[in-house]
Length: 294
Length: 254
Image (cartoon, rainbow over all chains, first blue to last red; front, top):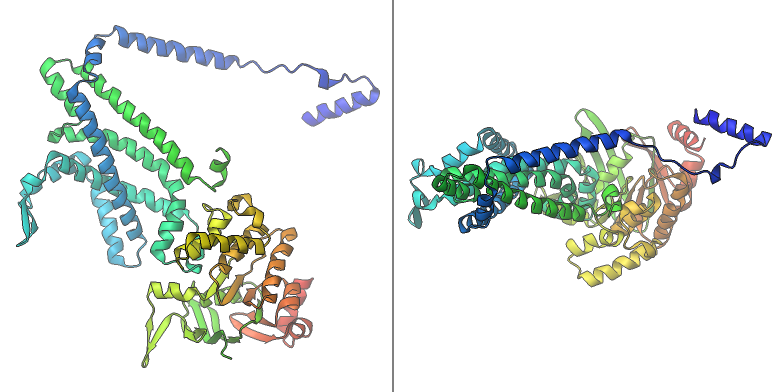
């Protein structure tokens, strides 16, 4: 169609009747649908905000408890647990992902079994199992050298850390494996050809490239982890959820305090999303699309 | 003088497919050997066996008199450890058909990765040597460019510099110009020609018969995992004795 129009213009031009199109004003298309959609979104947003503002929620109570000592202490614990559990998860995930590439069937199976077991059992259940580890192992240590009573060792924090971290490792290992698979064989070969051994090649050449693929899902999982830490409230670990609960058990302001917790979760997640973006840009160096959008 | 590379009855198979059916070869220091032959004839496989990207199933290879991949103790051959294999690979430099530059590193970082990480050369010294090498392949201006910002020919020249940075005794080229646009082939061949003139020992798998004629001391024609004939380029490319060689050469030239 465009071609026809062009031809017509050329013909018109040949006849000497054509106007000089370059002088014409350009009129943009009016996106009426977009204005309409925007109006709908705005109205709905206002309606929701109004509903919450006029609902049976005393915002002053939320505001009052937002920076309560218990809540802030809980927030600190939430961040600490999320970061440490994620670190444990990433370390385990990388090790298990590398084990999956092992030529030894036993090592391979062990990695598979780990993923199968810890991905297959609900996190809440795992947390409770770690917390009650003393039922299976009353003491932990090397006989004759040192020994601890498991009940003393398995504090709520430690049980939550193990439960969440080990669980996370099972998921992370699959993410890391996908990342390692995304790097071409030629990269392993080129690394070998300059005399690198496997670990060197992994650390210097393969993993940095895999990071580009690994980071977005890991960021996703990290954000998930922040919220999974709320599970630790069931074993009395005083993270931000537990802190809110312990306050509303006393003053009965349930919804108000749940909003306090929600607010802090959103803040932590926002900060994490920002950091993820920064990291992604760093690992995208030399990779087509992303390095152009720098 | 001892040959830099010696192969006796080298065999390689993948399952029931025999890629190499017994290759015997000696290469002397300073020699440039071109391997030609139809695809699937085993020439790339043989090259990859030399630096142990493939493990041979039979026969033996020596580089600089050292047995490749095994240690002989009495009447037994013990497989080398991964680290020992990595050390043996230092004797050879490899240039790949698809360049295989490290995409997350700049040209200079690609070149100094081996010297800095494997040979533990001090950083500043490695960088100076790296810049010199990039200058030698005509890319002094591109030190800080990432591979994606370079043309195929430039990438391959960086890859050559990266291999040279390890100061190998023997350079292996696996169809180094096959993935290049025709107008970029010349710049890579020019670098290789200079390298040959400087006395580097080279084994080149190639379809560039012109390059073979001009630069090679010896041309080896392979087919179906065997060396069909070998000799000076004028003889193999000009008046081959085997019908199979004649067919191949006329097919490539037409």
